Length: 230
Image (cartoon, rainbow, N blue to C red; front, side, top):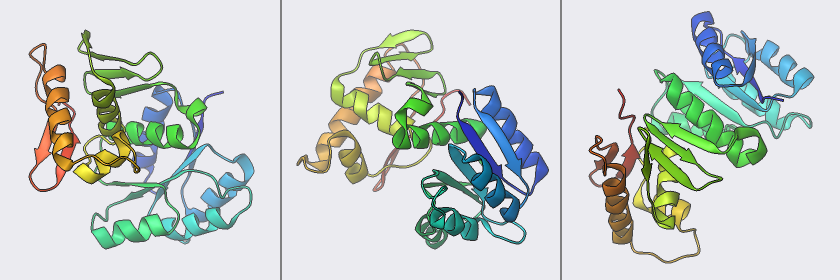
């Protein structure tokens, strides 16, 4: 059965947009318009993942996070916090409340789907399927294959892991240290400049058929994967 996503959002157009795109991607959804209703639905149906708006009437998204984490039946539900607050302190507060990830408004449906799939994959790989997509790039994790705009892309194991890390977090800038953790592991010593070498190889492979460069270099920060179709 398809994963069930709980959407707790008091703005009806936003909730309907999320529900439409998630269901189009193969998920089932249920919608609550406030925190109390969201808590009740979560306790009754135990969704596979919850998307909570920060600013809810009555019980806020932050408070709802705490309530879900305190409940025996709901404590392990993966949670994405949906917020207009992009400042670091707000992001830290959201994650400290028990959220597993956050998405800052405005966001694209493609980004939300990628975040949902990535979080489900981390929590329960059987729920999320075995493919990733971003723009015209498709990644088959089971077959270890990458296709861009219909063309096969040949990657080495390290470049494959780097691309996977970037595709699971589209648009987010990942530092070299973070990429080292994700692609090599915390217990392996690799110099930062090694990341740059493998990113260059990944970039060349992805652009091998004349496609636009979708890996963005942020000086002093790291790298991010952009949607090259927009």
